[in-house]
Length: 316
Image 1 (cartoon, rainbow, N blue to C red):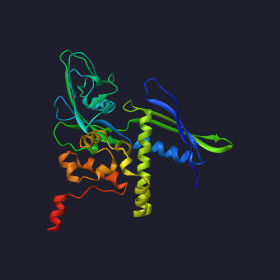
Image 2 (tube, one colour):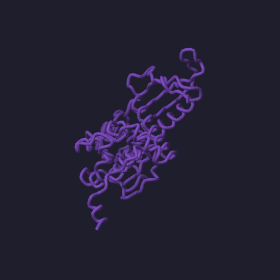
Image 3 (cartoon, rainbow, N blue to C red):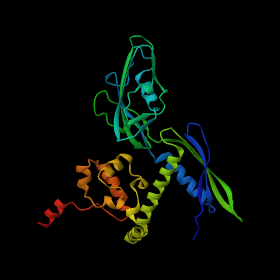
Image 4 (cartoon, one colour):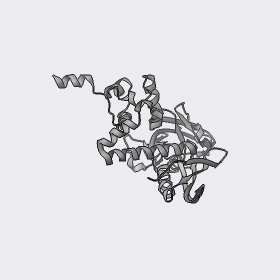
């Protein structure tokens, strides 16, 4: 069997803002530089969770095909600029930001009234210009978590005046992987990856790589279960003790971890001791968040406990 021992990730350089860095990964067996490098690059660019503005309401207008007196940009221009506001959500999956400005001057992303749930990274980014002392601009923006890219056409116009926005959730802007020859001792037929990562500032390059590696690990663990059936799941459950695995290592979102820890649940095996109703009703988790826990349990061949009330009904 090919040996993968001795592989290290070393940060070679970084910028002052810690949003761009270069890493070396290796030494790798011949050919595995491309295997790992392409996989990491694809996941970094397409599969990491981020936050973005998904819809707005401007001055309570009915639609986006209009202009606002005293504002240099029309609403379509403002919508395009709001695509580039970079936001980090510290808690929750959705929130609303508001902005209200009067008089001459520029309106920047930092003018949005933010809460502890949200951090606006590029506060100096210009959203609009007010050219008249009597000009007024108010914006209500819905911010959501998501993965990849969501076109405005995919969102429903569920209320008059709500304007969908093209949303770029991915926190990674650049992921460039170069494969170079490497050596270890007398072996000269090895690979190494030189990985250049640039983020939007909502996460660090190190965090993005960690999330990408966890995503790939979860994918290959799932493929192992699919390929080998229940036997592979049994082996996995024996070789990896779920009581020693923390929730953060499994990619569980921070807000869910906080609620679980409040209930005394800190490891994977403890999740399986409670039924689905405990998480949905007592902890108030959304269906998507409960599904996230079930996915983690499935990778260890575990499942949520049966609901006692349902079991009694079945017996009767």
